Length: 184
Image (cartoon, rainbow, N blue to C red):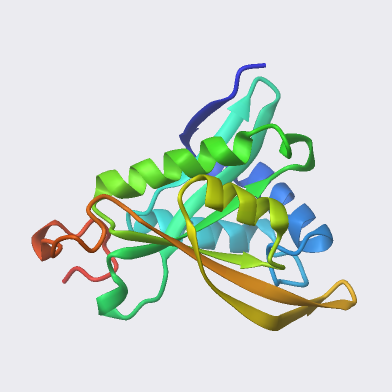
């Protein structure tokens, strides 16, 4: 089945909520312990897309397989050129290269929008996520030890980063800021 990428839509929220629920209950990527309901996921979706950040869905003829989005790394104005990526896959989508497709597209869209840096904050220091990010040019920038306690164990958080576009090679043009978070 061919996989395609497209913007995520509000109509995808039931599938997005299901994928995230499974990740919260069984994984370590999210440090949430109780999965949010669909109305909370809708509010998060609206907050992200309403600020101009990309939110992408991976689909095949069977439906939504996973999703990825960029959001503000931090909300203080000096961080406005940096985004944080998030990627979640349904169990049936893992190990099929879909995460790589989503992250590659997210990097391109964020670069095209004018963002200069992307951070990955990898819960549980998950080896597959670390390998994916390294393969796409992210560098290790730090490991925070025992940052979360989930599934009966302490979890580390890995921080990774990569430049987008010109990165730090030139000053950004504030008149072309890509998001809405810091616009007047």
